[in-house]
Every structure is written in structure tokens, then in C-alpha cells.
Amino acid sequence: MSDEVYRRQVARLFERSGFYREKLSRAGFVSPADVGSLADIAKLPFTETDELRQSQAAHPPLGAHAAVAVSETARIYSTSGTSGTPLYIPLTKADVEDWRAIGRDTYSKNGLKAGDSVVTTFGAGPFVAGASLAAFEAIGCAHIPVGVGNTDKVLAALKQLKPQALACTPSYGLYLSERISFKTSIERIIVGGEPGGGEENFRKKLQGAFGARVYEIMGIGDVAASLWGECEAQAGMHFSGEGWIHVELIDPDSGKAVAMKDGAKGELVYTHLKREAAPLLRFRSRDHVQVWTAKCDCGRASLRVRCIGRTDDMLIVRGVNVFPTAVREVVARFQPRVTGAILIRPKRRGVKQEPPLPVCIEGDNDSALAEKIGAELRNALTFTPEVRLVPPQSLPRSDYKSKLVDYSEAK
Ligand SMILES: [Zn+2]
Image 1: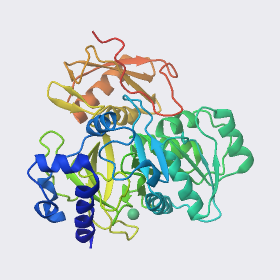
Image 2 (image 1 turned 90 degrees about the vertical axis):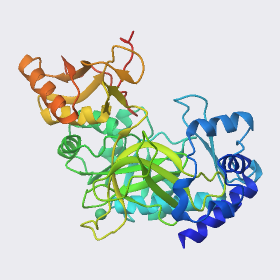
Image 3 (image 1 turned 180 degrees about the vertical axis):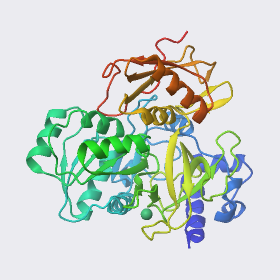
Image 4 (image 1 turned 120 degrees about the horizontal axis):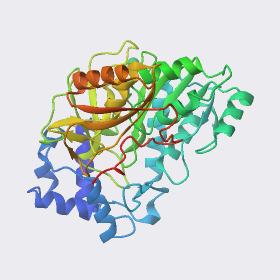
């Protein structure tokens, strides 16, 4: 079934997307017949975010990769533009409906049901996170969007409206957990928008502060919002895009396929099987994950992942890949002597670093503690840190995504 849908999609790309017609031809695939079946997809070239930006800059407004004109779209989101020029993400009416169905599946896995109310603190507006709001409605939830940047409003909504669920980024969840001074009605906290929601100690802290369980979600703007969702078993996020999106796992360095088996690690690569407006082929997500293929305790057999970090946040310390979120996870093992907040301050610009790598950690001012954390980081992540303990609450907090690497001391 997927193969038939895939072949139709490839034929459509040849017909309607100048970007893919050219890209595939350059790689030796001059017709849909050359591309072949879904089983052969690994032969095709990857699509990178930079290519989409260039395509849009050269062929405004939507780019040569888009397969529709503006008049055929139902909605056009844009990326936040944190890493350059904003990129438009068009959807047709059918795409909007598909995203809603995928999101509905994801939040249902999180345990949301009709009659629940949910406070959200995601920045929606022009961003794809806004697409998740329709998913809450589709489930039958009362949705209370509070938005970004107003903690008093969040606390007031929790107190007065007594919602069953709260949706936020892991960074903001941590920030709120340090400010909650009353017993909330929250049963589940849905975290997403950045890596880190799967970290065990982070979850313990959040679950303790709210008396609620944490469920992680993950989406990717160019592919689909709310694409993965964790279930009651809390054993990784289930894939909700079956039939719509094809997933591959690759080694980010070599680009070679990694077999999807229990425990395998790699970067996720996505292909739209049905997307109409801006279908992508083998899109590199830069999300580095661990996968599980075995049936989950909840009974679902769909693929599960835990996000380890973003390959574009990654540092390489004398040949060792270091993910800032993984550093935060190891440091969190020392709670309550640390708060869980960290900031890596590289001594030089760029990805490649020489040890020791300076890591600022909020916690008790105790050299024995610093030594223990340093040893644990060396052990778990095989790089040598320079642990700098700093007073609690001295590192910057964010109500959206916390910065974990700060280059201001770099030379
Ligand atoms: Zn499950």
C-alpha cells in the first residue's frame, strides 16, 4: 500500500516540483520508473533544510520544491527564523486535515480524551506548533492557549480553570516546576518543542513538582507537527505518521542506512507519502534518536523513539560526539544537589573543541561535588569537562527553548 502511494508521490514530484525533477535527474533518476519502489529509497539523494531555503530564495514565494501555487494552499506557516531567513511551509486543505489527524493520534497516545482541558504555552501564531491546536479540538478537549512569556497567567489558569493537562517545552516545564507553590489539578504534562523531555531525572523533577506524569511529543516543522507521541507506558514516543510519512534511520556522518532494530541509534530521515503542497524526499531531520521496534507494553506495535539531541547542537570534543542535552541528563543525576540547569561555554568557536570543555552547572558550591560530576560525565559521555559550579538560578532561564551552549567566551 505504502509503495503504491510512494510511486504516485514520486510521479507527482516529477510533474510539479522543478526542484525534485532537477535534483533527481542530476542523481541519475530521469523518470519515476528510475526511482523504483519504496524499498529502494536509500539510493536517492537527501534533502537538506539549506536547499529548501536556497530554493525559496531563488524561486519566491514558496520555492521550486513546492508542488502547488499559493492560490492552491489552505495555510502557509513560517519557521521561526532562528537560524536564518524564515522558510514558508505551505499546506493544502488535505495537508491541514492530515496534520490534524496525525496530531490527534499523538495527543490521544498521551492520554488526552474528550472532556479534558489543556493549558498550552507553545508559541503558536505563524509557527507550525499552532497546527497542534486543531488536534486538541479534534479529540474534544477544551483548549486554553496561554502562549509564551507570561508565567503569572499560566499559574492563574492552572489555579482557576483546573485543567487536566499542561503542554510546554521541557525548559519551561522545569522553570514552572521551580515556581509552583500549590497543588495543581494537572494529571499529565505534555512536553515537546526541543529535546530533553525523555531525560529520566528531568521527568522525576517535573513529576514530583506537579504530581503528574510526563509524556513527550516530537514534531518537525517541514514534515508534520506533533508526529511522535508517548503513551501511558512512558517508553519512548510512538510514530503517528504511518501511511503519511516514511521514516528511515541513518548514520549522520556517513549518510548510510542504519537497520531499524531495538536500541539502534541514528538520525531520522523523512519522506512525505501524501503531502500535497511541499512534499519532501529523504529530508534530514538532524534529530538524533534511539529507536525501539518491539511491541510496547501498551499493545501498540508502532516504531518508538527517544530523542538524544539535535545533530546541529552537537559538539565534537577530540573526536567524541557530545550532545548538550545528554550532558544535562547526566548532570541531573545529582539532583537535588544541582538544579538541573547547565550551560556549556566552549573556549573556541565551531563544532570541534579541545578538552576540557567548560560546563557551568547550577548547584552547591562544593569541590567534591564538582569532581564527582566531572567523573560521571567522563564515564558516561567519554569527554573531559571542566566543571564550574555556579549558584542556583544564576543561569538564564527561558520560557521557550533554553540555550545550552553559549559561545560568548569563545575566541
Ligand atoms: Zn506504548
